[in-house]
Image (cartoon, rainbow, N blue to C red; front, side, top):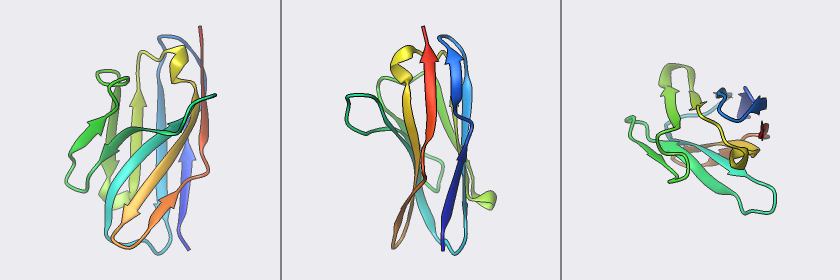
Length: 115
């Protein structure tokens, strides 16, 4: 059984920073992409950032220059460093891990940015 343990969410003022972590444990092999999605109030879930097994990263236009995704393959962990946070970054952030055969989702961690 595979589990994704997310941490790092919370309440922060605009302009502040948070770092999200997501550690995959269990029988998970050949991880390809690791991603962060978010679900904001009244909006559809969107891809915030993703990183391949080789380290290539991509970002939503709304977070470019502010967020940085990274991963530690030895620990099966993906991180999302979020700087210069804005109220519109508020939402539930979900970790998404893709292996060759499966897609796994975390339970989500709440990020709230106050103005």
